[in-house]
Amino acid sequence: MMLVVDNYKTFIGKEGNRFVLLTEEQKQEHSADQVRQIVVVNASAISFGAIKLAMESNVDIVHLGRRGHPHARVYPCTLGGTTLTRRRQLEAYYAEEGTYLAKQFIMAKIRNQAALLRSLGKSRGNHSLLFSAKAIGKGTNDVDALKGTIDEIRPKLLGMEGNASSVYFGALAGILPFSGRDRNSKDPVNILLNYGYGMLYGEIERACVIAGLDPYLGFMHTDRYGKPSMTLDLIEEFRQPIVDRTLVTLFAQKQIEDADFEAHGDSRLLSRQGREKIIKAVLERLSQKVQHNGKQMGFKEIVVEQARNVTRFLLDRKQEYRGFTSRW
Image (cartoon, rainbow, N blue to C red; front, top):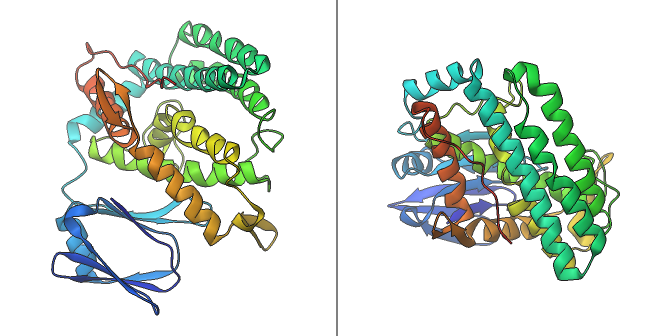
């Protein structure tokens, strides 16, 4: 389970093999054997004993900001992979393998965008969504045809990805209360997307570390101080099946309301009620099992498996890598 701490001034302590959450109102206890991750959303304190128990139990601790992006995390030292994997990761950037991986990430994203629109179009009898899905799907051929080093193809690759996303979000604007994707917008859809993607960043980064990848050494996204470019690469495969699908469902079921948002200076952010709602929905989606490679797997497991597949590809160049494509 994922332990979410969203109460202001919660103290996270330890008693035996249990994590103890203390607030002014109550005391909660959770067995370390049942906890996979501790997510701290609000100002809290944690004891050295609780951190030590988390590390001994392979539980990572992550702090999310008000917009859902991870600010900091603590990993067990037993995670991290081998030097060989990271050396191969760096070498691949300057070889055709880096181009290959970047193209796979983007083709998977485009296929997932088309698949979600196609699913929504069929279920709603919306021909406009179906038309957009078909238009987006053709973009994978153009991406696959790109030749050259990653630095040479990056401008074209980003342009193709941007064009597909423009059509995709333009189509979603026909069924959701927003005019398109804008990270700085104050509309409910973009605020929820920002938070959901922030949660997903944390999940992808964790998977990269488990698989032995350097989260900051990517291919499609350029290196920059503090920018987890490998995390940003791999997340492209999972935005639509995990976060976007979750938001469409929340709005379709009319679960989003004004009380889910609050003013914060010049910004508009999620209220505690809103955070609880999106966190619960995304966690449920991550735990949902789907058919993958001939067996039932939760999205959480698939994320880790895809990161490990990147590692396998880097260590054995004869093994192909295929981006994850969801089937609705």
